[in-house]
Amino acid sequence: MVLPVIVLILAQMGTTGDNGALSLATSALTRELGATTSDIQLANMIYPLVGGAFMIAGGLMGTILGWKRAFRIGAVLCAAGEVALAVAPNMFVFIWVGRVLVGLGASFLIPSVLGLIPVMYTGRDRMVAFGCTGAASGLSAVLPLILGVVMEVAGMHVTFFTLAAYFVAVAAASLALPPIAEADEKLRFDGIGVTLAALGLFLFLIGLSSVSSWGLVRPLDGCPFTLFGISPALPMAAAGIVVLAILIKVEGTVEKKNGIALLPRSFLTTPQVLAGLIANAITFFFMGAQSILMAPYLQLVAGWTPVDVGTISIATGVPTFALALGIPKLMPNAHPRRVIQTGYLAMALALGIMALSVTVDGCSRVGVYLGAFMAGVGAGTVSSHASNVVALALPERDAAQSGGIQSTMRNVGQAIGVALLGAVLLFGITSSVRVRATADPAISPSVAERLSTVNINLGSDADFERQIADIPMTDAERSELVRIQAQARFESTRIAYAVGAAVVLLGLASTPAIKVAEKQKG
Image 1: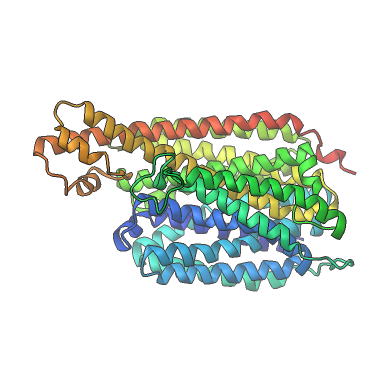
Image 2: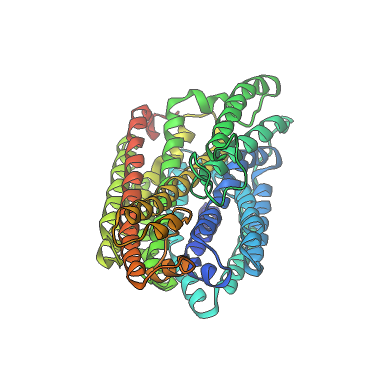
């Protein structure tokens, strides 16, 4: 059944392409809607934030409502979100209406893609089908290039309308999916689990994502409120972890009572499942690192156009597609553990190359494309087996429902990547500029004092000059501060890449739990 896989690939491409469009729109959002780096970071965060909070519920709803119905609901919500992005008059509407709707749509659509595969395919066909959905991330590289051309020619608004039409077409294409038997048993919706999961994930992700704008401990100027005099970011993240711990406790009781739960016990007690979920999370952590570090730097500092940035996606997409599809098809006996370990090493190498490609006032084009190519090698290699590793270790119904938790782990990974590395980047730039300005004899104490209240965004030298325009200083001081900021921007970006590579390498610690190969599954 080739046609159903094509439909699933198109859906997966759309959700990936939406993130690519946002990266391409960085300059337009700054110019047309007055977006700051923090706004762009939040816009990147909201999609995985909402998706992460509700995708486990999306997996459960697919089990209860039927996977095809959930698929269509998701596609329609994504289309509505793209329309909202296209007509948004300001960043508030763009983020809290458009991005939220797309996130909700993805929370139905992506679990349905992963949930349909176990019920439509078995054995080697299932492994290849999972590889195809991983390869969709590579095929989606075509979308940013096309969307980059559309954005260059017709603007940001037409670009998002184009994506809306794409999701409408995906909803229509779902009519080609084969009939799927409905569950015989009457399944109950786990309202308590959904509420706890959404609340816990929301608190954790919003707290983590707000560190760079609210402050780690000391509240920054943009902090909306304080808790006992400190920033609420870390307390919110900690509260989210507590709620998620309560969720795990509650779900055991719910599963015994109802026979189905939002978070089946098999997900938590099977080491191979946990290793597969970590692989999903790290792959999208890696993608989050690219979206918050590479695309903004290239556009805002190096001056690349959306088409220029879109061409990079081809360098990433070709190896992603080739390896995610080719490894399961051409190397069916390759052990998933070795494959995933190789992918982690390639991802870390890619981030190292990207770090070295950054220069004080721009980047090395050769380094950028080489890093992008290695990024595709790493992402495609891990994607070729990450989802199948989870499905192999679960009973059939749990394997289908696992689409929700896998999708949640992807979004949590992406959110952590954007939040953690965005915080490292922005904190690094701001703190480095403040410390160096204070120590520099060419900068007066009064100017250094005024800088202590400024949160510095990632941007060009001209952007920085505009940000400090209201601080009285001499031309010599301004030139020195621009030099200091450029050096801080360069060093902080490299440090953020290094932190990302270290996190990816930590994933190697989970891989010994991957023991079941496809041929061992009875």
